[in-house]
Length: 189
Image (cartoon, rainbow, N blue to C red; front, top):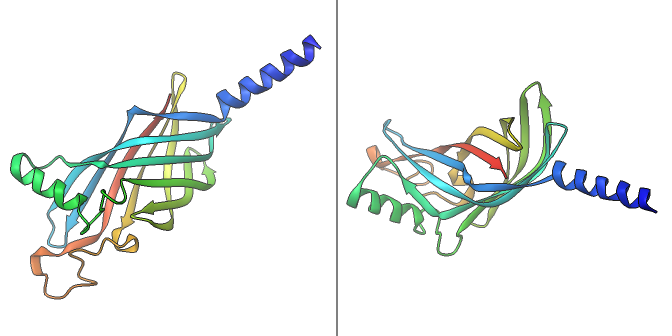
């Protein structure tokens, strides 16, 4: 009986420590870059609110990352201009954070090629879910795992059409590119 209890304890410990690893909101970061069609851009950050990664033998198997859109903030502006841009991004023209305070990415499929983890999953923004795929890299820092990557997202697929040449005419230098970039680093606890 002691042997069975010890075996079950070891299996449970292995399952918990190897598979479900909570994401550290403190040590994770997400940076974004949005572009105007004429070439200028805005940069900023958004916080990771919650999530977990399931990792086995150095490979990501599953996971969910929840982004806190209420924390959305530009980093290239200051003062009144920063407040205006932050407010506009949080408005219904863009993310409507009052109604949709989070965005979620759920990993559905992973293919590993060398050091590259090719992740495929469902991204939900503003109540709209679309499948996306991108490359990432998983490393280990002490007991923590770090997943890093870059994603290009077409905002119009999620209903963020404000300033898009594909939906509005005669925008000129006010046109905003449909795609924006996300550069992320999520770390487990």
